[in-house]
Image (cartoon, rainbow, N blue to C red; front, side):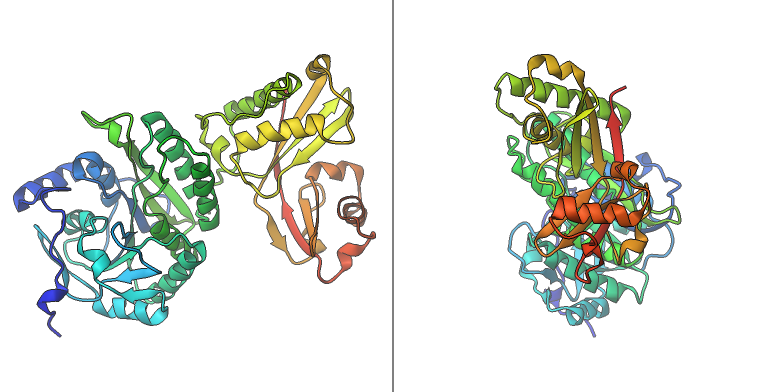
Length: 475
């Protein structure tokens, strides 16, 4: 069936975001690609993350991802943000072609229709696409690297994580029947100063490497809730990225590899006081599994230990808790569960932690240091002379893993979180030092932390979750 004239979307930002003259555009794209280097990626490529700013700002970053494309990609699903119009779920352009100065790129009408049938969250709507640049700017790179291919353009901007995940799962179901490349279009932070952008963006990319939509969303929310000056977003294509991650997870991708980062202040005459961040990344299936970035590095661990002492000293001076700037160590800006344990001359002064992150790791440690020092009823009233005698332990928790029953708990390795109705109780892995039997450990957890009879962990409605910890101590 031949496409109607109105099905063909003309370029909206040619001559603005990128050159409008074909030979100039082709020359610029080839120059960006030539400056990028192909890499030996650790796995099979499934998707790329690319920015969508004007080429003078983000073209070289985008080229780092497009340079990795190889093989026979006949279908490309473009996921990006709708900047001009609210979209309930996902807006799909279902027919005709997208036009650029380099020619027409046909839409895979069959795949587009399959998405509409897969979920009512996909809508056949053209208006969000008419003036949108986030997908258009990727096409000249694809035209130069893939040559012959079809696209399915999808725009999103919902803030509802559940909707994003539903869109992602529906997309994965449809794509399971064919080979298709996902191109996720998103810039990073808007519009803080260069240093804040660098810190926020490094944190966001570290969170992205976990490949967990919920964790990425939580990280973004907590970074924005800090109220850093002019930090308006962490990923402007967040909805598309969350949906893409869900689709990739369902489809077996396990790894995100960051290829390049830059921001708008890196180009000549870029404004360092009003910055947009850009990144290129590859999403892969890998037999090595996902990279584990939950561990705090030694230099960052030293910052946490110093933060505990400083916070306690300032508490004794009656100074209020004040939020500091984002850390140069991106892992300290992640929302991680953590416990701070204090010992005074071998006696427990306090042990208080968080099991539902609501702030960055650094801010959590700053707050919990005071709680453990001054608010745990098991401790004494501290004076200034006592601070030097304190021994500090910081336990950073891995994500909780729900398990079917007590049989999955490994003695000496796992911490345990039990939940029954509104009651919850947690023991860190260190508590195993006092127990040789799993039954005694769980009995004490029920009795001491949940206010339930011993052996309540046998109840059918008891929920078991396990975790491990990274312990940080002063030398």
